[in-house]
Image (cartoon, rainbow over all chains, first blue to last red; front, side):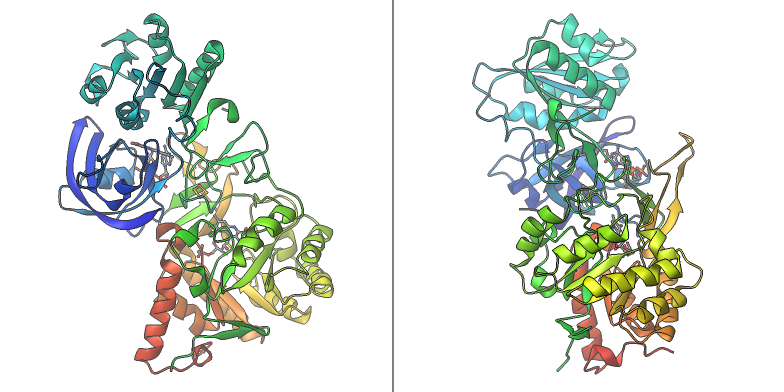
Length: 263
Length: 301
Ligand SMILES: Cc1cc2nc3c(=O)[nH]c(=O)nc-3n(C[C@H](O)[C@H](O)[C@H](O)COP(=O)(O)OP(=O)(O)OC[C@H]3O[C@@H](n4cnc5c(N)ncnc54)[C@H](O)[C@@H]3O)c2cc1C
Ligand SMILES: Cc1cc2nc3c(=O)[nH]c(=O)nc-3n(C[C@H](O)[C@H](O)[C@H](O)COP(=O)(O)O)c2cc1C
Ligand code: FES
């Protein structure tokens, strides 16, 4: 059940230059699953459209209902969010989209080797997924450089963590795919979120391994709930809902089986 | 007693507030937030004879107080639309207005005929979409073509016909008059205003389609002016839209001459906008001792 409400900020901190972490008290936590996102509305009247942000953590059942988002200041909207602090109010709508686990629940057993790959600001949704998976979790996180790393402690607690940096200042020098190869990480199933070139690499990797990859995609959005058809991505086959080769990232995704979409 | 109902071409709407085509799907998604039975009408996304793919992405961009869209009328085609969307809308006590699009007159007529025996209460003919290459706006910018397509659709249509007008014309009053003379039962306005946004860092157009239709609060003054001009020229009802996000905005349109109004981009900012507008108009009527909407329609001359 989707909710639109004015949420209260519990806390906000800067994780590293330009990356912020915010906990919001919201009833959305009650029905949210990992891989879903929320629409966050800037307070400024000049900005009409919500900013889609993935859920990085969801409070455990029984705890105070809250969600955590981790975001990068990319423009005026996220800049506005970054200046807010504990006690401030923020309008949000969610939970939106499908999430990672619904299609794969049956496939995953205690000895499944799950490979989680996050690139840059695609890393946050991997945390809740890593926490929820009850199997063998290997996470690869790719950053630009050592001083731009975030969420590493939390990811280490939720599985084995491998790191790559573009400049080689920490872990594998190169891409997340280079790290997978260098560390000989084996996988039965792959989950990934990150920039499109990385997702292409993940799709190829999955093809080589003959395994399924579930990738979380980004597209410009207006409604965020599936009504406006603003956020489509090309699909390999005719989509059941649209009747053309298009799927809505906000409603049919953001998580897609890599082979279903054209990257 | 305040009576919010309005009558458009013989169809009685519970109140003058509807959704603007393309911003609300067929109500399936937004029904999680809004009781569709509280709305005067649900106006559906444009539907064509066969499924349309639409434009490449990015299809949407935010602008100051507004947004650009170049969806390109992606839709599943009339067959799926009747089976799924119209079927869904049967579950609500609201009027259903189907927005019709096509690349040729024949295509428009094909959709209109397929809708004849359905639960569609009215047809809104989109001759004003700026985002597709053929058809659509070509009919809406040339008085002769507009007159011709209106007449042909009126011959075939079983339901009242609303012609949806483009603001991308020199004389909106003339276009409204052309529709009236050709037999249209109502006109709706405005569709989006053609616009453009450039990413100066990438030195590229923001939208894949280069141009898009501007909507939202930024276009409201233009829309109110156009409704007023059209209201001076025609007697058929006008459905006003363009940047409505509050009851006050809606009342501006009504006072300019609109018999009813539609809420578009504001649904994206707040999915409850339509019901807030309904409640706000009702409160205004009570406060000012207004008994019927028609007392307000065109009251500013
Ligand atoms: C499903 C999904 C999940 C996301 N999760 C996260 C996350 O967890 N953390 C994070 O930092 N970012 C995330 N993003 C990207 C985030 O939405 C954008 O960075 C943000 O909208 C930028 O807003 P702005 O006002 O700061 O930038 P501006 O450039 O000023 O925004 C202008 C407009 O473009 C849109 N926009 C700009 N960049 C993007 C983008 N990359 N994707 C979609 N819309 C964009 C904005 O929403 C706004 O409507 C996600 C995007 C999607 C689609
Ligand atoms: C995303 C989007 C899709 C639209 N699709 C259609 C459409 O299919 N048919 C149509 O006649 N108008 C369409 N419109 C135009 C709206 O119905 C409306 O005329 C316009 O947006 C102005 O109203 P607003 O400022 O309240 O959004 C669309 C507008 C938007 C923003
Ligand atoms: S953003 Fe409107 S359909 Fe996805």
